[in-house]
Image (cartoon, rainbow, N blue to C red):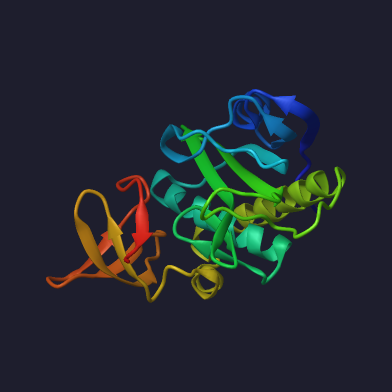
Amino acid sequence: MDTPYSLEVHEVVPSTQDLARAGARPGRPAVVVAHRQSHGRGRSGARWMTAPRGIAVSVGFVTDWPQPAMSRIPLVAGVAARRVLGESVSLKWPNDVLRAGRKVGGILVEGSESTVVAGMGLNLYWPDPPTGVGALFDRDPGAEEGPLLAERWARELLALVRVGPGEWPRDEYLAACETIGQEVTWEPDGAGRAVGIGADGALLVETPGAQIELRSGEVRHVRRAP
């Protein structure tokens, strides 16, 4: 049986993350969808740019996942996005959704104690986007498509979370992740070749000295090397 959840769809809100956190209850996740956010945020507090046709969705839920396993949830959210959006999109570790090499979406996971809020912002249509940014559709899909995709993603994510941390689809994430096999750099002066994903969701990187593990909470940016 699907996990029951509350659902709110808004035209504009300050932040879907904040509303989903406030609405989450044990056994009843909160799903909040908005066409626009006035104070949307990305990873590390960065401001989220809004496309002319975009959608934001956040899922707040109380989980029994142990704290060390929480680092897998952003990647699980990425797998849920790929399942819903299709093989035309790929993933960049740890939290970006790409189409044709351009960022069309971002995933943000925040947690406190047993409450987790997983959010995704999607550019649905953007006729003149900034450099490096794209959109999911080449033509405006209309106002109804965004909420449908948002709720499908929320349902897929909750289904994957119910399976538990020991069965998260790491192989599926690996197959969709463009970062693997690339030369990457990270702040302040790291460089190496991404070769895999660890059991806890860490990015495995070969450097001249050794293989190391990068975790999303420890680095702000991982970039493809020029």
